Each structure stands twice: as C-alpha cells, then as structure tokens.
Image (tube, rainbow, N blue to C red):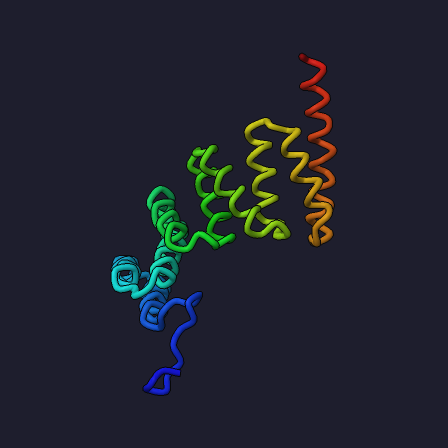
Length: 180
C-alpha cells in the first residue's frame, strides 16, 4: 500500500484515472453522445500515466471505433495499443480480424500468428486463421489449423463445424490437385 493507504495499480492494470475516463466514455456512448465519448477516450489516451494504461485506453478507443464502423481508424489505435503492450493475445486476434476485414491479408496473418504464439490453446485465433487461409484459397494450411482445433477444448457445435470444414477443405484440395 502507498502512504495514503490506497493500493497502487499493478503493472498489468491500467491506472484508476484511465479506467474512470474510459468508463465515462462508455457511458457517453450508451447515451449516444459519440462526440463526447470520442473526446473522453482521447483524454484517457493523452493522460494515461503508464504504458499499460495507454495500451488499455487505445484498445478501448479501438473497440468503440469498431462498433461505430470506423475500421481503418480503429486499426491504428489497436496497433498503438499493441506497441505499448505486445502481450495481448486478444488484441492481436482483434487486429488480425480487423486487418482481414480491411483486405490487409499479410498484416492479418502476422497479427493472428502473434495471437497464436501468445495463446496457443485459445481456439479463436486458430478459427480466424483458418478462415483467413480459406479466403486466400490456401486450403492445406487452413486444414492444419482446423486439425489443431480438434485437439483443443471447443464446444460441440464448433467441433461439428470444424469437422464439416475439414471435409469441404479435403474436397477442395483434391479438386485443386486434380486440375494441376
């Protein structure tokens, strides 16, 4: 505890002041005052006392921008968040999805690989990577990711979808090999 008896934030937690500003921004969003919300998120970023706080505020701004449909701008805030705190598996996953949506396939793949490295047992980046590779018609690589998914704990409905995807990918791979 600090001299004043108040616990200091742990290095992995954003400062109370940053968290408070982002909560105010979220309240403004809920009230549909998006101009005020944007200003509060920016204030949280500008006044963040630590890199973790800044990463948190940038990530929160990115989430709001994604919700508002401002994907390109969101990508920049999410990238800044990851520069300040590169150990965010969920952040890398989100950046991968966002870059894929923006047609930045190489950047999407790099971000998803980071997410997989940080959280190898999390099925979400693996699913996203498989989908990206399918969209890029890299079926054999997609199969590899989907096969790994079957070794992870996933809900039965996802398991069924992955098994179906693997059957379809096997057919696509066979067709591609026959046409060569």
